[in-house]
Length: 339
Image 1 (cartoon, rainbow, N blue to C red):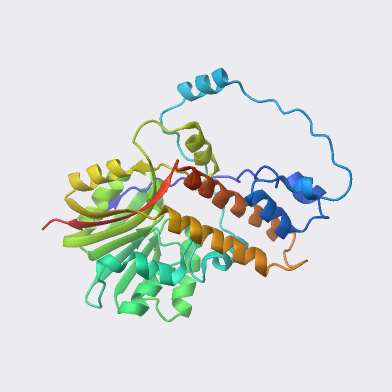
Image 2: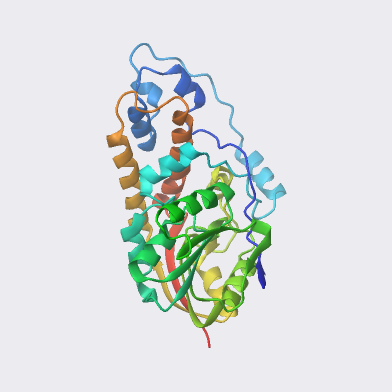
């Protein structure tokens, strides 16, 4: 058995975005949630859109550049992740409204099949879906190609929800979803013809160990197709990237394209595709949120769901802002393991 350490630590609550703070949610009921989300997404403070007299903002103390530089110099190059936010049923229901039934990342079934196209999947293959979330990709592949697909998720609530969905779909064996503890990931050697992963590896701290485990679990000539957030160079993270790391519920340890190429090559992979899909990914993010906002009606969001929706908006707004600035990109990789 091959142990793959996927160092996703558990964490605490996220900060609420500027302009959609808990105080704003509580103190500004005159402005509907849909308008607040649209305002925040477009870079406005929702309080500026509220009727009535405007409050004079209190002065905000900001750190001097020298203080920020000193603090960054005192920290390690790549800070450890913050603990994870929980995945309550309400949040799972929200992300499925955003991205499609069974999916916790943008794109849905049609986009998934587009991403996996280079693999030429067929019913004779066995596949591992790493970081499978709710198992939507595993079920889509199993139903579309007759492939035996195993989804592995290291966040227990997502894995449990994935098991429920595969059972309901009658695919509990054909598209099995398993929970593996992050620090005790055990993958059987030479078990799969293909490994697929969608926007999951950027949360893994020790990617060298993870990719070694992936290489070991693939059969000779096996395929590895994945999408992930990458940084432009393997130099030290920028201040904005460090800030983003603190906002990510499962942490963020993005590599550059160069780092992925070097590591994959070192573990016996021939990288055939390294494709920039940032524009497509940004479009999918915005489509999901625009559709959700359009569907919302007055009074349709419960007080319990409102902070969850705000936090989810912050996560995706933070990612999309960095993608637009070019500080991170979304790449698809396709590699073959040597015989």
